[in-house]
Length: 226
Image (tube, rainbow, N blue to C red; front, top):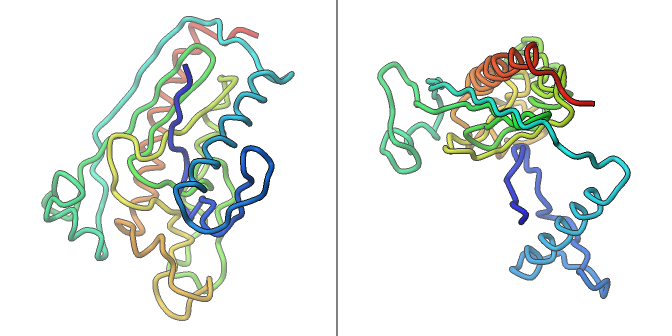
């Protein structure tokens, strides 16, 4: 059995304007449609099967399980918070401007999984945060080190599950926040419009690192199998 999990899909990590090859090789599909989504799913499954049959595949034969999780109160700002306040997209709003959410980490043998309660910009996990001149907050990259770097200190494989148990909007690096004119990225950004605010990224990143480091303590007693 195979399961598909949503990953780090913030920053419009989608095939919205891309052409998707048809499964049978008879052409491509560019316009939004169920057919495009269907063939995209087929392509993902085919690539996953190739990876499992490829030379870099390995058996996860270490039976150890470890779980860490915490409740986190993310600071909310901007228009997105009103939907949370009204309970339309979330359980509610907490005094002081916070939304309650959660962060989890899981070790399955030699693999580590973390969860993100929204649409996470991938650079928070894999690195590459930008700090362009003229940004709204003249700060260095806040969400460092990348979460994946911490996960791969001991593990052989790392995963991130997005939209996991919650949806508090887009989660983006504070140094990339660009909601005020003149826009560094030339126009107003979709991520900022649908985010809980510039402090959400740092809060989620800190929570993910904390949970990964808690999981990493298990490797001191039960190291990976090579």
